[in-house]
Length: 448
Image 1 (tube, rainbow, N blue to C red):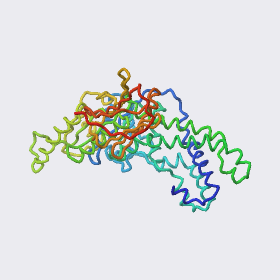
Image 2 (image 1 turned 120 degrees about the vertical axis):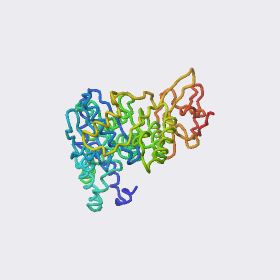
Image 3 (image 1 turned 90 degrees about the vertical axis):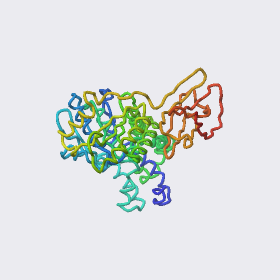
Image 4 (image 1 turned 180 degrees about the vertical axis):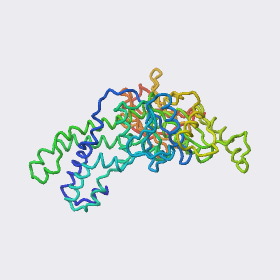
């Protein structure tokens, strides 16, 4: 809306949509990574997230070190704007993979480098259009960067490294919980926009481009070439592929790192609920910085009692997820030697790439004529959940998060029955014998 208000009210607003379609479709660097070979080897993806300061980076780095020792070709990638991965290894890292040791590379993503490499040609195209309509150069440059673009390019690196076949395991050291939820939910968030732009391209840009281009050279300069329009669908399909990679429950899992403190626990509970809502499988919880109960901690004895109290609540509340307990060390965990020791204490002889807990967060279950969509929402409050259907899409809204689930064809046009929250699972029933075409928002019943 701000962009459209800034532009002069003229016929040349229409070419902005041409520019949008062209910008997404025709960026050589942007499209390059999607034209990779489709047959790629298996790559395990481990994502570590949690509240700021709980030790995510140390856990991520140590996990990567252990994986490399087991012979896995491993890349640990930091998406946190405030990078500390280089501090953990005590080695300088850049925007491209740096070799740490045999089988181990590390990278700190720089969104500005990615933006320049992948979007520069599109920025020039946008800037020319905006400046032609009287927008100043600096403002025009800023307007060419679409919301979520920086996070998007971080996700695109996942596809690039998966397609390369260079790595067996990708370890993601992410930003604090809120930023990570935004990053991981980006493909879902962009889904409606993808459909909108594809429809604009199909029903407006293509039919009008040739007739309009014949009206004047000025109009023709705003219209992208036919081959650029042809690539729009391909790019959007690849973007949708990101979602498939991250929610592939056989290859991608999230691990939650927390401290045994109230605020950390509450944030982790919310994170688990929202991650499950978006279809991300969480297979482990790691409780970091626990004081040794056998040692006298002096004035920290009270903290020790608090930690033990919360530790019991964590084990009970997050069950059946495995809970890994990690002790507080007497010194900083910095450098390869310290990380190796931390990894041994964390995993022992176990393989960090193994699936620690195997249960999908979203299920489709049929019992005779009743079809249920089941979502595991361990800490959700039924009062905060709303459910409704529009067309072939099921909407589940919790707090400030919304999940859209595409329903099977057999459920299209059906309205859900009364949703029930039972044993940490949300059950949304559909009766195949009933056809109610009046969409209504429904609350959720708590099954006692």
